[in-house]
Image (cartoon, rainbow, N blue to C red; front, side):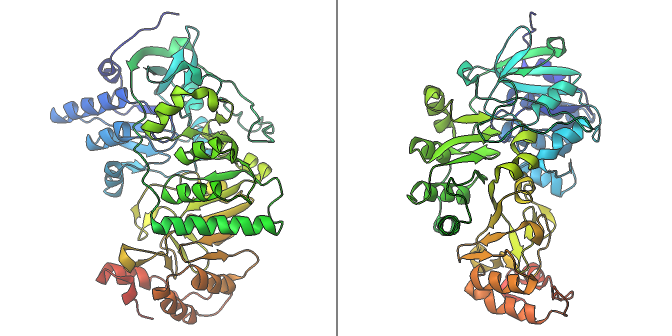
Length: 493
């Protein structure tokens, strides 16, 4: 079939106000670049003429400044899901200019198929290559694109010439069947492939192909700071101790790790630990440190949804794909984050928190309980189903004005029932087989910063009895003190 090659502006012209758009990708990798920017420019022109223009935007996770950033600055997003991390979009969400609903990443595709969010009008797919019969080699991130492409009335392809065709074979593309006909997911090792190396779409739905030439635009990761290094060292110390005492099998277990300084610090520390054997990863994102682990033979294989590499690392990867093509497999989010597979493989989950309370509840999303930061992402998928669920955060921020260990979390994304281990720069709290009061002592003693320990013990004494001794009138004293004085150390009990 002969496809119609068009400009990004021509594609945007076909997308009307109120349309629902599903995009490929997971974080910046795999996210379309040109058409979202053109939609933003269209929105600005429409608004200048006094006409409304917004789209509903569904992705795999966060996107990039070329998508969420441009569209948010143009106030062109009406509804957004399932995750985001761009400051301009965050401002729109917190000012209610954009309706954002925060979803577990493993659930988004199936909920779209269930019809919870209405029809998909357009799918925009970044591709390394497309054949005349609609077989697509995807880029560096998959996300929810199998579902969006299947349901969309119309499809646009961004054919990115920066992506090598040699990416073929690094994807495991499948759309799970819906209940009551869903069979068991036959993944018994991170290496197991159950889908296709290409995304197959109906070529008759492709209304235009836009040629581009962009890397993903991921900035270089900064070196871990001292606090991140301490957290990373504590996480690895816990893993090593657990391994030595037999709590982790001698073959070790697959790891899941998020993105950022703490995640990088953990991975770099693992690379330097000779007592931890080579391992595999079953995760949603891999970043630069994973390639170093692979070069050193420490990580033997990684199943992921996205290769979130800095542009300089991405260029090196593309120049020598042969070294890694048999070590990395990219899957859709409903597979990379699937609870069934996570539980079966015994994945060790390592995620970050904004704050944790003394009873083990974790807030991953809301600053001071009200302002959305990024979202829950895949942390819930992994934490609830992990062999061991580890959460980490700095003990303090803003020079000590904020304690990230608080009497009660101002928002709870992961309850005490899903948190096994809490780690800060101060130490490790093992919460397994402990009641609420025991957990409180464990967390205060091992994870709280010394400047806040006495205050936290004072709060614990205020408890009104029962299994979990909370003081309803004092639970948010830390947060109130910060709102009123700018410093949680001014809390009174």
